[in-house]
Amino acid sequence: MDFTFTEEQQAVVEAARAIFADVEPDGVPSPALTPGAVAEDFDRALWSRLADADLLGVLIAPEHGGVGLDAIALCLVLRESAKVLARVPLLESSAAAFAVQAHGGDELKRRVLPAAARGDLVLTVAANGRTGHDPADLAVTAQRDGDSWILDGLQTGVPWAQNADLVAVPAHTPDGHTVLALVPRGHEGLAVAEQFSTSGERLGELRLEGVRIAASDVIDADGAWERLRDLLATGTCALALGLGEGVLRMTSEYVSKREQFGHPVATFQAVAVQAADRYIDLRSMEVTLWQAAWRVSTGADGALPATGDVAVAKIWASEGVRRVVQTAQHLHGGFGADYPLHRYHAWAKQLELSLGPAAAHEEALGDLLAAHALG
Image (cartoon, rainbow, N blue to C red; front, side, top):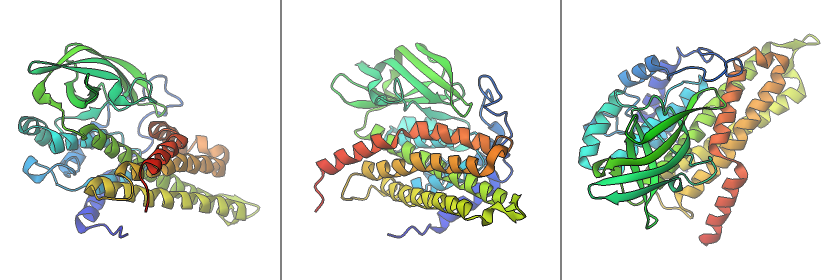
């Protein structure tokens, strides 16, 4: 197993670090001190800088104005973005654009991909279903009506729903097939109610009542939603890894300077052991992330479907990011409330909720193991 990154992937990382170096994690109000949303919109200035650096088109092919790299490259950029809590829909927009590129028609590609790569068109994905615990593709029905599809249902917890131009909505047909509809914000029959995340960002509850979408704006290819879902999950694991690394670095700097009994607390065995345990968590999160990203990127065969590798990455990311921030709060003591750490804690909790409980992923992994004999 070789996780050496290519020159192109390393170049993307350097470009991302240069862009995110100027981002201040406490640049918006704290969710603990702000009633409602911490901001009305995402960081448009940062979004423009990412577009200028071609980082919004990492997954988009060069013929559509993108860079033409893979999910590993996107995860590398997401990892850097989470270290500074970058408030941009990079994951959702990139993943939705990739679904269009991989499975959409030629007309849809021409309308969506170049604009997405330039940052002129922002996409998001409705991936939480009605409650966040049920399959998102079962929350909305899709009925074919001539040259259109009619959508009805409810999706909750949609990130950046009030600011994105298009929402990719999975829906199931009467015969059990899943389609992916690109619904414009403000479309007739679509109502968006405001919700708030643990991190203080705005979410949207989407209610679709007789929403008519042209067939050209609906992706009905087999496996399109499943592939998009795996990409979103893998990208969320990358965000959890980057956030955890940022938190551990912040904690290391703090305990190296904080003194008790005339010595830095970092020299105390109990502190060093806890930090070492969290370092092990991060390295486990990293190796499982790259395994999942490689499977998602290449479609390579394995003993289990790629969903199995994604489940393993989600298990480590969900529990690992929680343990990292909890230990960081403990080692900071009461000062954790005054440092940017409290914002990282809120983001980590939101990522943990987005990934779902590790026990559920362990159960899904068990089902895969039961269904696929390992020789």
